Length: 446
Image 1 (cartoon, rainbow, N blue to C red):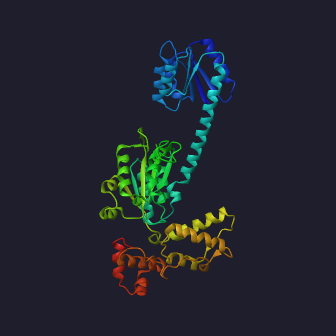
Image 2 (image 1 turned 120 degrees about the horizontal axis):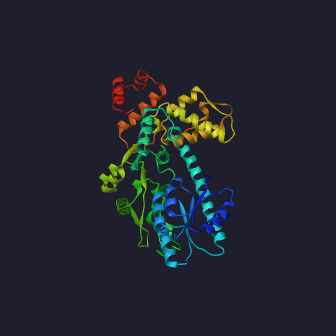
């Protein structure tokens, strides 16, 4: 059987043979003729692309067969061919899932040919989409995309793999630049929803007065400027994944509307009355502590628990040790290959400099500075002088961050451990006891 097969169900042997011969003129079509409904149903397991169905069969009605076909595989396209032109019956069958309704007349063969051509075009288009989705899925195989050998990254791989097994809500937390959207895509493309849409919405990037229409859509004439119906992000993501980035930036009033939509699994477009059902997995991301936002009263507690699901925390780059060098080399190799530059190696001085920096911009910052260095490099070996980090208060730390003194101390100790790899040397350099360092490591703060 070819990749595009047509089953003809027709109890008039002469008319059936005419249709079979006419459609078989296209060598890409695999055409088979059946004289009754029972024989067709016995062969449904072969999953034809199209079925042309005589509405008046001796054993079963066209309506009954249509329902059974759609129950078995809703992707099979069914064209009803009837001896009578009955508008009410045609409308009923189209509502039940028929692709088209044709009456038996002189030009039926040509009309059928044209309808099947349209179905074939759509079939080829869907095939191309599936191929692209598979390619994107392979691109986002998380063990090849989210690189690292640090225990925190290995745990991250495990969490992504567990999340992909079901449609559980996922909440991703991490500093800016740690790769939250990359993780969200990895979960989506590793799951059974990978052939459906991945729709990302950045809450901080959409004006607050437009967010509701962006999420839920609107009807024509709902407000000034609404010239046509607009599909909302919930509808766009149906069957797939809706990624709500920077979820903590959503206003409390909008939070209540989001909560209701998630609870009811339905939305109403602005200016409309029709309830639009959806089936989506929700993934959220934030660089804030949502539990703290709940305590402050800026985030609803009920929405917090609705969105919590499986938490996936992302480690900051400064806590990932030698992953910094692994990622830097990866970014350098990819950039050089894409821009037809010579592959670069790293000097020991450069490696030390990369490990000693605190990366307030995380992976995104590392990628940026490595790419600039690749452009500016004089030779095949990147030297320490080829990398320039932005200086903030001459420390390498963002002192605008509201974190405790203990956390700043932990950052400094981590930076020195990355650089010197020896607790005794770090103890001597920072003039602190080795027991302090061991205790902080035991508490997983380093």
